[in-house]
Length: 272
Image (cartoon, rainbow, N blue to C red):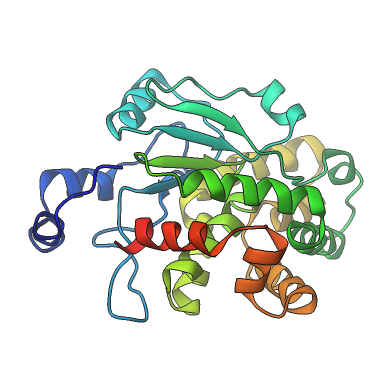
């Protein structure tokens, strides 16, 4: 991948060049949870005094895009799009084609649609979501998919994007792992994960209005627990990591099968 010289990158961070400003301000009307994994501006700070490098990895909800938003993504120079949805999801809502980017599928089990239909209380919804997050770590197929995607993210080419349906659970876990790998403090990783609730507030409100009118106001709170990012959900993934592997590094190497070379390549892309 072609990298900006350090001086040019530093100048962009300090002065806010047009390219840097475009990255910071880019919002997609048809994918409200699209954003840079690095965060806004100069990128999330790291514990060693650096920053996560913007313009390398992007995250999103499903790419049901307007023509204008396709042009916006094309302008980022994306080389690969990684889809974490399962076949039923991609078949029902295939991604828009983004010129210059190859599409890759890495199916990870998300929210089971058949279980959603039977949810009767907020407590049941919370239990389901916590099981899903623990499954990201415990399920071997999920681990294989995340591991294969991370190997591609480490490849030395241009900017890459990964996404699922809402861009909050499967995508949120992958983004959290990348930020941990880059050395971002835990509280900032959590804040970045929870930022989904702000980015997707409008679409969430629209969906909950549909729930209220079609299924009854009494189910709004239940379905809201499915639609939000919640610290307790992310904690279940961390608990599963600690129980099975003892550390995030062991989870990445033993659980996802990533070599130290791949992890070093990801760190270099994130912070180099």
